[in-house]
Image: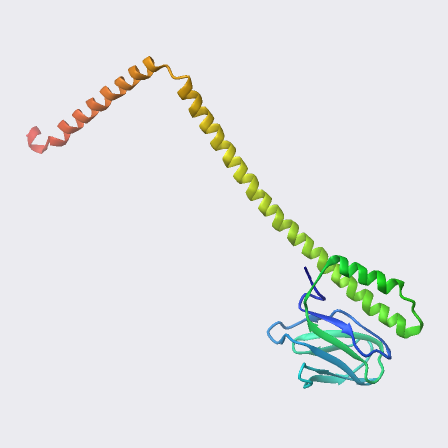
Length: 213
């Protein structure tokens, strides 16, 4: 359940004839980012254009290897020599299992590579896998913190329950060990004290300034 790509969108190869690779990209202006599916297409070896899901062009420009390709508040970096018609798919990030990421990386590393095109494909896939593993690590850290907070709550509840158990045990012990004769005597003394206090208060409350003039 780890967010794909950079957490906002993921990048994958589409048509790939040239020897180019792409990074995982990033959102540079969240306010300008429009979630959706995009296609980065090289209209020539030195030109590119980005189309949305309706095949409407949203950005375009000249290409040099390693330069930034920016559109709708996002950017990606392509390196190498793309061929005319090469495409990359840019889609909203979904979710992916850590094990799926590792499987993909193993497949990429064990696939036979032939020439610069194969190596550029490996660069794209390996870079994507490493980014995904970074996301997985952040995801695990967040989950660990959340679980730790829950365990702390459970520990606090356990401590409170133990305090209540101790208090109840002490109360039961006092009741079981009670000396009834002493308890009755103490209660009578306290009752006499209470009655005396109530009587004194009743007399004092009836006094006024005229009692002293």
